[in-house]
Amino acid sequence: MPRVLSGVQPTGQLHLGNYTGAIRQFLDLQAAGHEMYVFVASYHALTSARDPVQLRANIHQIVVDYLAFGLDPAKTHIYLQHDVPEVTELCWLLSCVCPMSLMEKAVSYKDKLAKGMSANVGLFTYPLLQAADILAVDAELVPVGKDQVQHLELARDIAGRFNSDFKAEVFQLPEYRLAGDAGLLPGTDGEKMSKSYGNTIDPFQDEPALRKRILSIKTDSLGLHQAKDPERCSVYQIFRAIAGAQDARTLALAERYRTPGTAGFGYGHAKLALAELVLEHFSDARQRRIALMAKPEYIAEVLRQGARAARAKAQEVVSRARTAVGL
Ligand code: ADP
Ligand code: TRP
Image (cartoon, rainbow, N blue to C red; front, top):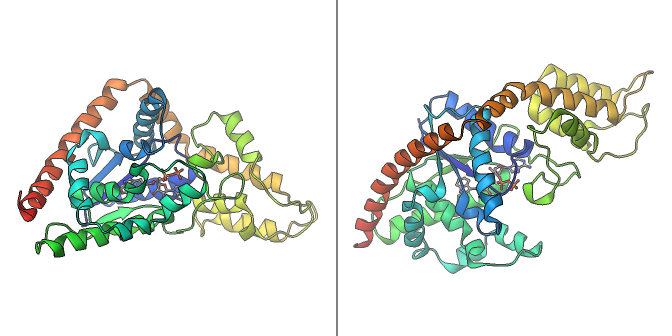
């Protein structure tokens, strides 16, 4: 079974898009028995984070949330990127074989620039550090959302180029894995749900705030009795992503959009249905999270063990890479 690695940046509270695009895949792969490495991309976050207190809190929260969602440290190595210094060493080795032109193609950098983020060198070389994360543990399969596909293609290119430049099979070429429904989840404003756009839905919010957030999802202004196209509605898209496209509740909801009947069916009804679904779907995770918040020593121990396992693996890989280049 292929070895799996993935990570999330600690730039804010995890949201439903992170869950449907990435975390649910981690849980499925963990259940299938893969060797798993899941980490917190703390150095990646530093390309934008400038508040140390906030960063530390975000890092801790992501680990708590990984565990609350159901990652099991007995089956998955959970660690912090900065606890595995071999990754940054590998990043340098990769940067020396990576053509400038390859980095210049990276859309995430161009997009961030277009949004007015300041352009530091870390942001430019971001995909190289991501390649190092992956290659450092010989990962073969990387579960991610659609927006990460280009980063995965870059990682493959760089790994292949390193192998061919040094005429050695140092790195495995990783493949990406997208969630079954593959699309990016829309946020409350209809754009891609993202921590950086302020349009997220946090499945761990307390109930009144969560309901309020779901009620704020933007819809068009078709009335109660007008037929609506579910495919064009963010509320329906989010519902389908969580419950599943073939789930009876999803099919029934789509039918009510199309034929509201004499009693009528409006977006308010759809939002209430979504709120119930989210509360039910994450009910166990929400309870686990409360318990985990009170156990900082346990979290620290999980991270120590995770880093130990990831480092052992990364040391083998870095040693292979050093030998190949002549160090
Ligand atoms: P964000 O854009 O909120 O900062 P990240 O870049 O940290 O999220 O993404 C973490 C993981 O979640 C990645 O695998 C990414 O592809 C996935 N992801 C993020 N947003 C979405 C979304 N709206 N729909 C599906 N997957 C997503
Ligand atoms: N760039 C990813 C994101 O923004 C996070 C990430 C960093 C990652 N390193 C990785 C994802 C390695 C998968 C594998 O979501």
